[in-house]
Image 1 (cartoon, helix red, strand yellow):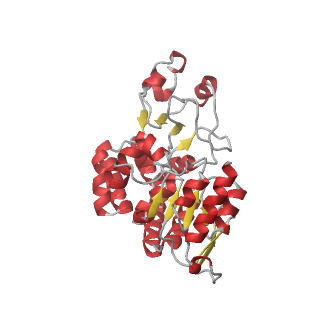
Image 2 (cartoon, one colour):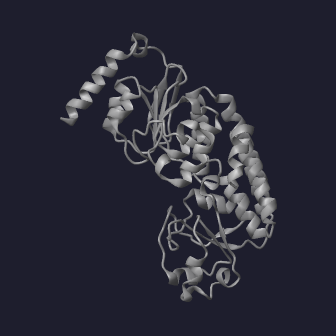
Image 3 (tube, one colour):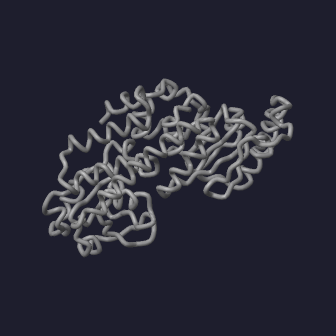
Length: 334
């Protein structure tokens, strides 16, 4: 029955489309995403379903949010996403934008009903991609796992949406900031050993060397105590005690989670109460250009810069990334 419904939806979509939408023509925009999927559009997309939050974020930075017709379901259910997005988009505030899937799954029938030119996702099986492409709907798969990927995906999105100049401007600004911070980090002789921990009470879930957060730590001029060549390894108390970090950076969790564990009391960062928080999470998402804002805050804590000074630097970056109107609305949450 489900297959029949999908088939009927596809046929309905095909019959509703104009001939020009499916007439073979030389693609004006052709690129290959970081997952190896070829993406072709005759012109910049006008209706976009985006099921991967870092790319939704990029749409707002490119000032192309008006082209969004579908967003991830978690945008409405996750307070860390809903609060900032509802502040800058009435459609999200009033839950009028469709949610035809999540970062992990896509509802094909719901996507088809929105008649998009382009679908952006992180995960999508080959069969679904082929089905959408056969109907003239381009599919772009993003990863946003490393700094270079984030920049490349922003440039790709600029091409796919017709915001090439804005994308180039943001990439140039980010690269300039990155180069400046990298030079400053190289000049730091006594780098603080730093332990990073993810949210929701997972104090023994950290970040390895092959991760975007590791990039943030390096740009900030500190040393990641975890040397594992993976993204998010889990460790135990004994390992953390052995690493003995000078500083701990938490992803939106309270320091009490560490202070309550007596076996960790001897760790330098805990003895010196050098535990800091990246919050609200929206402003420090390491899978977006805001990996730099995270690095600014971490660098401030490591070098003794005042919170007010590093926070002011973050606010300026947010305004640059989102533009004056949206940026000034967002920084009211900081």
